[in-house]
Length: 244
Image (cartoon, rainbow, N blue to C red; front, side):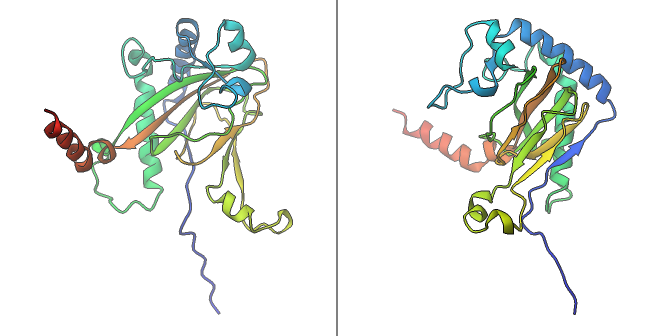
């Protein structure tokens, strides 16, 4: 009797360390310090969102960053434009490569595809976690692939945790003493490495503990066809024709 096991509906999560990771971590740490000084951003941990809403909490003083953590997310500053591009461009290029490596680990059936024109980075930001700080559970909307790159971390705390996309379904059917599936998957914050995952996958982190900050660079990748395909062109054409 022959047994065959298939895993047709897996959702890969990869870890990749570029050869120039030491230069990338140095750039990130320096860039994060400048952002933290020059740019008003968001806060993390329990203050990440206003209670009862989807709005991000707007800090009123630097003391809020020390208490909850700092992120350039929603700051209005683009790391793809000057003056930040000079610092972060090598990180953007590495993020592209990380996303391409992720795509190759999926059931991608277009081996001859022009990967250089396949997609684009549509958002990136930097976050700084102090002692006790964390990020609550969330997904990355309006994107397909997401990443985090660790520029500084003690690697013993602040692990990133992913939740199985089907967890709400099998949690209704299986008791805790008879589980057949993992509900969560934990990965350590390895300095100099990317972790890449599907944007729809719920994730969060444990608290970071230590005297040194944990500094990360995060962002999102989208397939070009989703934002520049015929459907978008058709809608734009119809709007133009309907105008008086």
